[in-house]
Image (cartoon, helix red, strand yellow):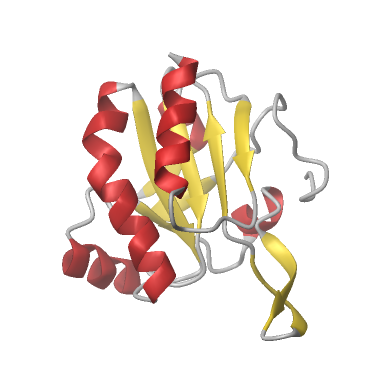
Length: 159
């Protein structure tokens, strides 16, 4: 599987199957013909992750019109996802990746600096994947403010 440094725009997106808050499992192949915004975030119900999720919630109607599906991914359990979705009325599925398989495949897990210390953790990242499964845009070390607007602009440029 590619590492963070190997996965680049223009490459095939790593295939995945994960448990979904919508029930059952979701695979990348389920969305053939649609754009997918796949975003990795550290933890449900934390300030930055909540702002990011609510941003995608608010943009989701427009993204859907552009033939785009939003999927959020964290290590959290489906039970934690259900609480997060209910509390903030999220309108897209959250995927549970407790083994960090997807995180690692997409380079969203690795060394990062936190409070001056180097540690392993979630690297907040977003991937725009087109309907053929090609990674069209990658955002790494995402800063939440203004991020959803950048993703929306990139989706518009695909259509």
